[in-house]
Image (tube, rainbow, N blue to C red; front, side):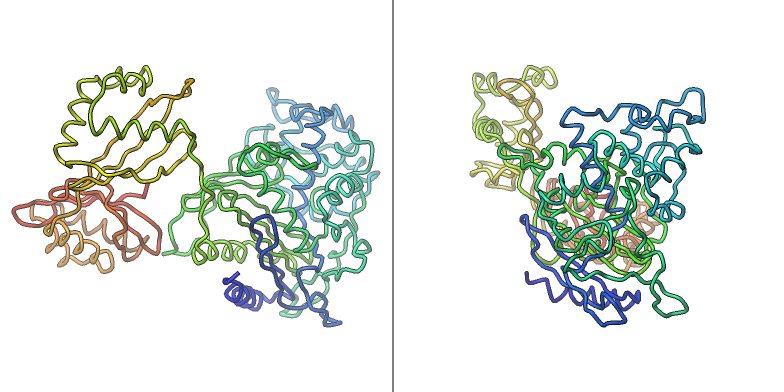
Length: 574
């Protein structure tokens, strides 16, 4: 991969800046480890270098293995996610719920970080060595609730410890043995294990912490995974093995026919990667002037899942324990993932993982997996094109769903298409359909004058018929409009009162326009024209802009007498 030198430099710089003893990384694409490497030492005293085969403790990334185990048992009909936990763990029968209307604690609550217990990272990280007897004693003492179950997101290591015990009870074997035989071995993750002695011939990274600027071995780095409670964070793995794990989840997309593989059906893997418990985005610490991106998401099953304004679906999980920090992150729509593993206590693996992933998208030309249009959508495109060229009642009756002419009368559509032909003249062949799903899409058709943007969606009928059709008429900006638009774009780089006075008419609200331009400059920086989205080219246009801060749209109106703008409204790109 051409991006490898840049990745190596980024990894080396990041490791040096954060004083990481070592940092291993891998890029996953097309079902395999496409690029991998490492900087630094797996063990400082012996000088053993780290590489993609070096084993690190992956901490909370282990939770995704616990979730797969639970879903395997669910798919086999041995449990339901809505089963009460007490069915499998009588030890929790004496739980005292915080309110009289609290629902009974279920497996789904534990999977989705919704049990109502307080966030427990500092305490939980010290429970890794609990053996099964000690864990039973802990549960017998009771658990304090912070909220009623299923009312809020609150990260709970304890919930996943309990899921480890549930898997052991239902499967009739220790949790660690279950994961080894039912997940790790079938996936070929042969270097993964639960304790240092499981490393066999693989190099084992030693875990360190910084004390007064010096690396010392963390006394808790090799805490033993003693029992079922280790389900929350006990696993060791290499970049090579974690690449198989990430590929396992990427392979779930898209939904399709064909062999499912023997570990977990694709639909269940996709279910894990869907946000089930919403978490508010964390904006604190964001650098002022950084690109504006919007994300929504939260916790699925053993994984975090987000929707991003620029990358679509994002899935992953971080891990941190004494001696180690790690992160795995992937883009299902791009078939692309990144893993990073480091051997410093709570190493900040998240930012370098995100940096690598975003740089790959920005620099390698990778694009989202195409959504193939259904045959019905391709047929609808051809028939709409015929109708635009010449109205045909019989064709329209067969093309449109029952709602179509109730929403807007047939006579109005006939008049609209006639006006379209008058404005644009004849039309050429339509472009390829850009699909948002197999039954919805858009395309462009060039006219003798200007062009049209056409968007339609099909109804869930058999056969599918057009339930909604939108046709936007677009003309390129004339000389006066282009000059005004160029001046506006220049002002995004350096908004001043003098510039605004030259660009906007006296009757416009120049103070408001200056304020808006300053906000655009702060959040997005200088903008350039990407495309004209709609407009008559003379008095009004809507344009898509590009900037360092991402895409945005602007709608401008022009006074044709003065050649100045009467208004400009910037908005986030839709």
